[in-house]
Image 1 (cartoon, rainbow, N blue to C red):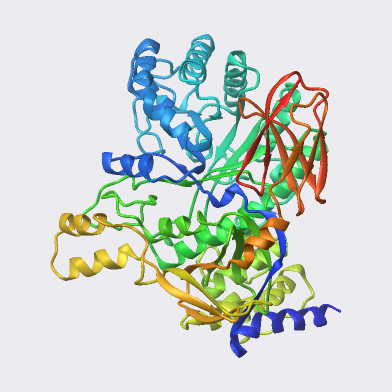
Image 2 (cartoon, one colour):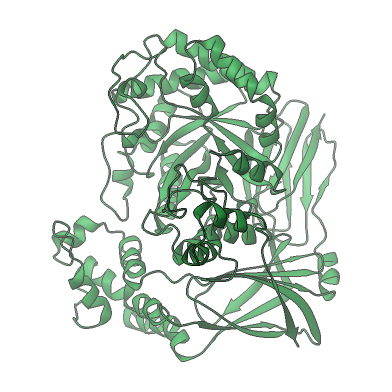
Length: 634
C-alpha cells in the first residue's frame, strides 16, 4: 500500500512535466466567505514622512497593526510624565491607525534606564539595545504604575478600544538577560496592571523569534515534538498562566523563513497543550513574519508571501503582521535585503504589490479542482470572479527537505546523526543526490523513509525551476465571452526593483530613480477574456497573478448565497445564524474586541448562546468573512 501511495504521489507531482496545469472552477459551489487574513497586518515602523503618509492614505484596511510606540516613549523620556506627554503628541496618529485595523498591538519592551535595575550601558546583542534595557525593573511597583498609566492613556483617553498588549519582543535573541523567574514575574505584573485598567483588555506573548524557542534555548531546525514544545517559552507561559489561574488572551510568535509548515507545527502543539491543561485556545498571532534575508527581494519572496497568506487563511491563526512596513536602514543600494515592504525611499517592493493583490480577494470562496498542485484562491464578489495564482517555485532541495522534516516529524540533528547531512561541514550533497535519484536508500528507518517520500516533490519543483508554467482556467458551464483584467507581478511587470536597476544602469542617480518610480506606483493591468469559460496563460517561476472577470451570471449565484442572517437582534439569550454556505469559525467579541466564544460550525445554521453574558453590545465575526455584525444583548 505504501508503494501504491508513492506511485500516486509521484504521478500527481509529475503532471506538470507532461502537460499544462488545468484548473476547473465551479461557480455553482460557493464555500466559506473570504477571511480577513487576506487583509495582511503589518509591523508599522515608518522611517520617513513619505512612508507614513503612504500607509495612512492608501485606503487599505489591515488585519492588524503592531506598534512600538510604547517602547519609543519609554526610551525617549526620563520619567513617566514625559513619557505620557510623548504619547499625547502622537494621539491623532494612533487613533488614525486604530481606525484602519481590526486590532492594534502595543508592545511593552526594552526596559528604560529610568526604570531598570541595571546601569550597564554596554551594547546588548539586540541592535540598538543596552544591557540595562534587557533587565527587570528596579521597582515592580513603579513598573506597574507605568503600565497602568500607559494603558489608561491609550484605551480610555485616546478611545482606542481595539488595543491588544504584547509583552516583550524576541526575548530569545538577547533582548532579555534577566532570569527566567524574573521574566515570568514581570509578565505577571504587566498582565495584572493591564487588567486593572479593564479586565476585558487582551494581554499575550511571548513574541519569540521562533515559536519553539526559549530565552536560552533554540531547538534544532525541523519538526518540534510536543516534549520539546513544552520547553519553549510559549509552553512555559501557558503553564505559568494556568498556575496563576489567569487566561492568556493571545499567543504570539515570529516566523522568518519559508518553512510555512512550521506554523502548522506550532498550531498543533498549542492546541494539544491547551487540551492537556483543560483551557480554551487563546487567539493565535504571528506578530512578525517575513522570509529569511537570503530570500528577501528575490523573485521567490513575492510568491512566498501569497503562498503564506493562503496557508494562514486555512489555519486557526487569526492575525499576522509582516515585518516591516519600511526598511529600517538607508543604504546607497536601495534594495539591500532589509525587512520593509517599502524601501527606505518608499518604493513599493514586488512582495508588497503581491500582498496588494491578495487584499483584492473579497466575497465567497469558489470551489475549484486542479490536476496538479497549485497555490490558488478563487472568490466571487458581486459580479466579479477573482482568481489569484502564486506560481511558488522554491529550490527543489529546500522544499523536499522541509517535506521530509515536517511530514516525517524529524529534525536536522536526526538527519546528521544518520549520516545524510553534515551539519558541521555544511554539506548536504549526499541528501541532494538521493533526492535526485543518483543514490537509492531503503525504507528501513524513519529518516530514509521521509527522504523517499519527498523524492516526487523534489522532481516536481526541479522540473519547474527554469520554465514558464502553463495554466488553463476552465469555468464549467460558462458560455460566451467575459472580459476582465489581469494583474501580473513577475521579473519585469509591476516590478519596481527591476525598474530601479534599469534606471541605475542607464546612469540615473539613486535619488532620481526613486523620484521617477514613486511618482506613480499603481498596479498596471492588461485586458483578458474568458472564451466559453476558458483561458490559457503561462507564468514565470515565482510570478503572482490576479484575474478579475466580470460575470453577470454571478449575481444570480450570489443571490442564492445571500448575506448571513442573525436573529433575533436584539436578543435576550439565543442568537440564530443562517447562511447559504458553511458558516465556518464563529467568534463572539465584546465591545473592547476581547474574544469570548469561538465555535466551529460545519453547517449553514448555528445558534450562539448569550444567556450567560451581561446586557450590552457584542460583535459576531466570522473567521472567513471580512464583515463583523453588531449584536445587542438585553
